[in-house]
Length: 295
Ligand code: AMP
Ligand code: MG
Image (cartoon, helix red, strand yellow):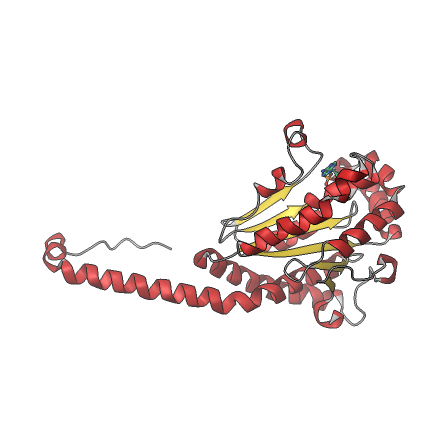
């Protein structure tokens, strides 16, 4: 499967895995040139599918992006959201909770951004921070964060029951690639604004974060809300892997959406025919009709 989708998909609870055993590097045999050309083709396909999603309004799509600092969450948003129609696309970033957010349960701030039917939402970080940074930095007692895995599974199941298609991507980079990216930011004046000492502090706890991610992958992967582990050391491969996996997930819905649109078209045409049949005299009076054209 890995060679077809470029990712490692975990769709069952309690799957044994060690992130150290999963490659962060591109598949051998995929060149950057091929990957970028393929990305262009796939982005056109995704744009078309999103149009069907929007018109049919039978489902919504939630894409969750998680990963260590510099793993490429923003890059995926730039490239994948960049090829979508802004109408119907919603990008939400979750940072340190505000006072108001802290005074609610941890899912409160997330649930209100769940996509409505027809919409596609991309989450840059998510409710998973509440079992990642919160766990590693001891921000709440263990007795509290331990309960959250179950709450998260139930929450995602609720979204799925409401016809949300859930994709969760863990952008998997190596520690050495992260160091390279952080140092690059210092060298390049155009990215200096991203410098943040906290990235280095977080990096010191690399192993703790990997452990926390492994537990997330073990406890919160389900058939309807699977995790996809993306080798993310190369940006071009990461983008190809994310768009390929997204399309593999959405393609099976194409027929349903198309059928709904066909039905809507037939219904609209029938209503229009009925309207014309009942009002021939009225229309005759107004004469030539309205010749304005939309797009
Ligand atoms: P960035 O994604 O670089 O803009 O940084 C957002 C910061 O917010 C990261 O350091 C996250 O760990 C932090 N963050 C996100 N969600 C939470 C949370 N629930 N509790 C504490 N910190 C969080
Ligand atoms: Mg950051």
